[in-house]
Image (cartoon, rainbow, N blue to C red; front, side, top):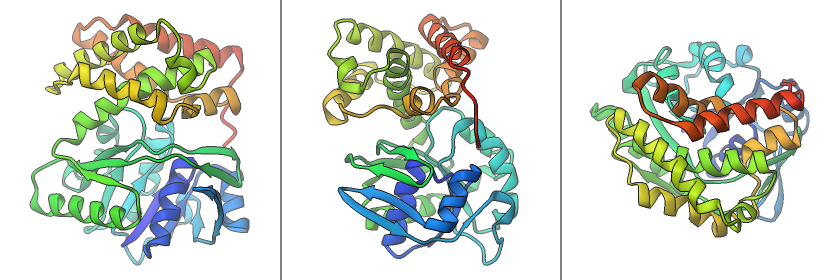
Length: 315
């Protein structure tokens, strides 16, 4: 399969490496100039499952990517705040047989992508793999994980493409699962990000350290209930007890992990994706008349922390 990976940070690196190792034709698309320079001159470098790996793959800025021959799949793994501009810039790549898959953190990305790609060619999902980019030329990939994806419509070609992508990802060892309703899975993953990503960033701790605190369960329960209330307004009936258990299982499964928002703000002093996680729930809740006090407060607190630290995007 000919695949363009749009956004080659920590997660994009994992998927690009694994897919290329499995024999797929992978092209890298990156907007961060320092990262792109490293990809072009030093290749894709990572410590993958305990082994140092270097792979040379074609890497381009969004306006440099050759549109022919066409891509079968464009996989978006960029930061949420960069999605609209990147999706727009890559419009020449969306041929009649090209599908777009979004596995990014955050909620509502199908609406952004839907401005540039027909819904019948959009696939949606999420990933529970972890990744850590310590510097522009190297990524640490050490935890076990999985991913989930599905089609947004019942269009037979789209459903078949979702199955094909699952097969390709399975051959690459990415442990995919085919979903009947990817939007449900996105909200469920949103519960993980809206609790652990946000709270570990504010409290400056890893997942296990947060889980060991006395208030952890009550905080997780309150936040998940707000996600569920907003999901219900969109016809998604989240199993609250299961979602809470899913979040709390991370205390042991990825306990030593510092989530991506922590890496962005605390480690690299960059703005976070909070507006596409808790911020999404807060905004939608306000518009729909659903009380979301925890998500409103957490969103404001993260923005305060960004401003106090003078967070800036150096890309």
